[in-house]
Length: 457
Ligand SMILES: [Zn+2]
Image (cartoon, rainbow, N blue to C red; front, side, top):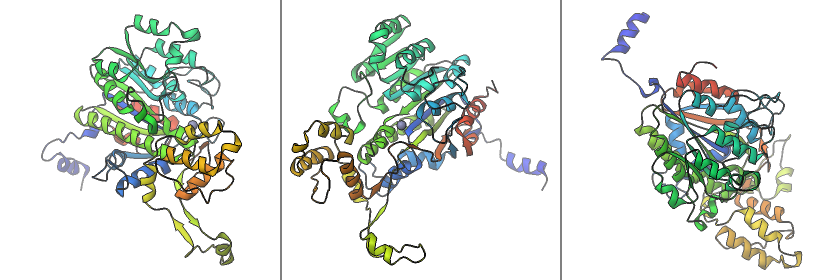
């Protein structure tokens, strides 16, 4: 069949305008900080098996997005390192240039490089940043500032206001209201920002520019959010940002960081990680609904790096015996193993305080007070169910206790830092096919430029 004939066939019964061929007007980019493939799988699997509350259909928003979007896998190595940090990752994603860990908005030679949000502004887009850590954190900073260190949060805050995004929401009030930046809120109001500091005030915002800072430092860990009813959830912040940005004449770019997946994973705290994954899922619900009702909206979800390589495993109950039965290095683990069960999700879901908070509390105890009885009480309170610690050893070694707790769950973590794991991405909406395949995080910006039709530079 000739190409011409094929064209005719495709044209029948009339041109079909698919969602994927529409021009892109808005981009909503959600970054799961530390969201490695293991954690994405951990979340989706729990929902699929009905082991988690709130999902009677057994479908997470995360799974639905992967199921209907264009999937990609990508790598994150920097100019000098195999493993990245959030600063270099954000910089590379935002600028398309290789950088080095710690740098914000600079290439590997230390030169300032234009970021996606700056470029978007030049094209007349409204822009917004949201982070449930602090808005000056490495991930949003890499899109909005240029400094030689991610730690220069005061400088980052000033540069963010100079860029003037229509929406800045998250934690980090301290960097806009103390020390050398003690007048920054005043300046923001002169620039036309409404400044809001709690959920109620945020809900009242109807339009215009908004600077919302809901905690002095980072927002609380999601597992502890029930104790902070005056704070807006990340989903609510996202919802509000979309309401505000929706009014923009030329469309918008919104960056949302679910930043505490990383923090929970650094602590190797699977219960807290689960709570952060739920928050991410709620955000995805909000942005998916927006995209489905606002043609021209492209969603992109990815991660900046993996944290921890956390996963379920099975446990050999008698390693010596298993080894004695091995043949030529093939270890036969039949019969004497314990497999993680889906009930574990139900336990993890009960957790009320992060292990970080528990560790801080236990650290204040003098050694003689760290009795088993006392530890059981503290652990049970944090985990939300009675924990029997009779099989736990070395009660004075708190990090060791957390490892033993994970082992009881059948959970392993390879590290308390980042790994070089490949990452998953998914794009949904017009031009989603550009994000299909295997790529590097420095390729993302040119895909976005193409999607918007901006051309190179
Ligand atoms: Zn991290």
